[in-house]
Image (cartoon, rainbow, N blue to C red; front, side, top):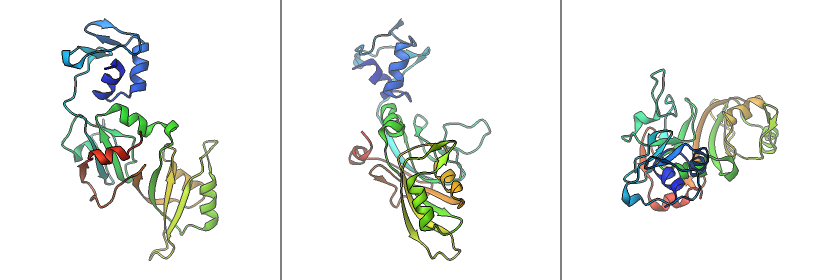
Length: 235
């Protein structure tokens, strides 16, 4: 097995990040620094692999789970302010969140111990779709819909074209309801897009990543993905 793959499978590092660490001389095997990409190791011999002097211990299995994240939880492994994190909702301490959802944003969040998979899902160059259900302060006009789809300017850079589907224009409290599909991952992107058109988001929920949908999973609950669902994830 190639050294960078071994690191990606057994840590939070992606394969690409592992390659960078190797080239920078920050990886050693059995006490010897390795800088050559493609170096082969045999996991069956229990090699001592370290990254930044930290031992990379082989995991017994790769786990990826889907969590329906509720509002009020930070998407991180730990929080210095002692706030609730998504790790409080699962019985695994060796997984890490794939990407992030804001404190008040709910919905589909993946957690895994497969660094390579996490890299493929989150890196912008792969352009994987993410679909959100959006409640806006007012009903979304077709002019606003068109503006969002064509792209709005955030921090001097225009967002990529997206898909907006208006779901309900007759809510009891006149809030707008729509689904927005993007393939970028800029910070607070959906909320900032709606702020730019003057129609702030009051509720946001991610319902899909690639071909994987949240479905009927209840808020605050999780389930481990099966092989067929793993195959639906970006490759």
